[in-house]
Length: 459
Image 1 (tube, rainbow, N blue to C red):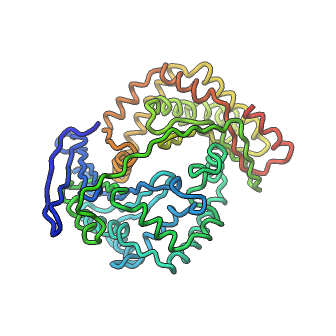
Image 2: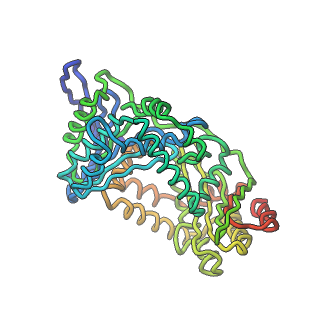
Image 3: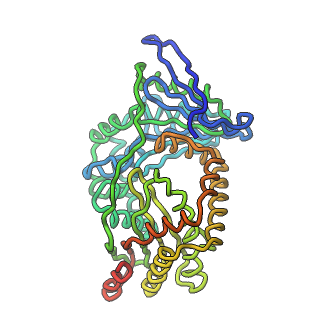
């Protein structure tokens, strides 16, 4: 699970003898699945997972910054910056960046979350040096020009509009606000029209310099890769850009904290002229570092994670009240959310909410059957492995693990942890999580009388 061996390598630079520390975090069989990590002198971490049987590689850089690091006035800055890093450097124009990866049949993208940002490229293994050069150039040499900021502002406002046009997506942002209020975790990752319009190139540049220091970054590569070659290429790219200090620096530690979500029984309704009402009924969950997260994962799978789950069977299969109904968990460094989503006709919303609430109360009081738990464990184990069948997923796993947990867990260890969950573990976490008074978020065309009854679901 953690370091099994350690070596040290040295390289002489013109300024000083800079020492890089390399560790084998997971030792695979015959080199397959081996995860290694090198920490460069400037605090930049490089993590790789080797899979020689494939002909592709995914290269990514994870930044320890998300929307929760923004002040109210900077809401949306992290996502705005994600867009701007594709707009050009001294070495490449925006077209050069995209065409370089397109020309080799690769794919390139990025995503921003509440606690991290990731930029990545997936290419043939022989084109990995190109992907490393392009992505590192973007991260270290972005120009963030005034003209680019103004042009991209329009694209981001369109993205916000697109999200607001999808109430099935937008309701999850509303639920975060219902549970967490006007806090960094409760605000939308994209920002709002007002905050995006107010952001200037100068403010975004300052945000970039503060949060994209090498100590805040994790480089991850997975697939048919050679760890030492990746380290050399990444180091050369960062040093050439003047972005890697030669003196020792300590990488930023994973986030921690003890945030408590104190909201209960809150109801937020956003009136929209939609064909369906979109609802999320939920309560506080678990932080991502909580050891009970394995039991919560089994509970979530059994309750609303598939076609055989309780919610799917009760709401859709038996009554046909909704097409889409599921439960989900969101874990942050210091808190978490558990939610049940359903989309249904406005006239059916109270019936759907009553069934969902009854099922939550039933499981909180009596737990799940052993058969349900056994089926959920099997489903979760299978989906875990199937979800890691491509190099992009592997890169995401090792990069996020280093950034968010500061350690790596092998797939076998993950499967063992899931299999070791007992019925008592699930019943205990069900009683604690589902036994709380829920809150409710709704988007839809509900009339006054219907809206006034929403509080019944959280009473």
